[in-house]
Length: 96
Image (tube, rainbow, N blue to C red; front, side, top):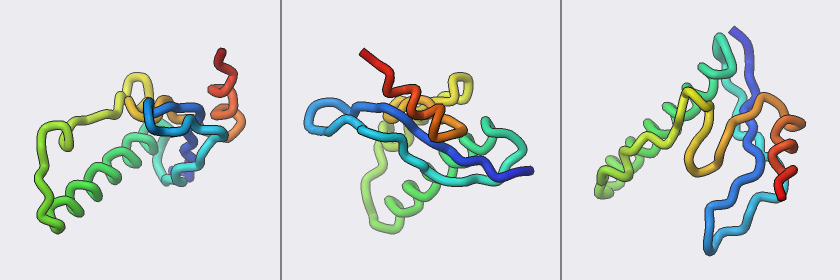
């Protein structure tokens, strides 16, 4: 087990949102591999969101429960691919 930094690079959420201008460090997660660290991060975020929604009495619909993470590509539909280093995340800004 080791500590893995999880970074995201360039992403754009669309109309009404500003595009990212630099990589963001999401968290450091202890796991056996980077792929497992990213999966744990996603699972923890989903669980925390659902627990908060339940305790706040919010309506939970099918979109709220949709799984946006893709283990095969190590990416999230909203923010894109996860990177191990800030340098790798900077590479996602080389878009034209």
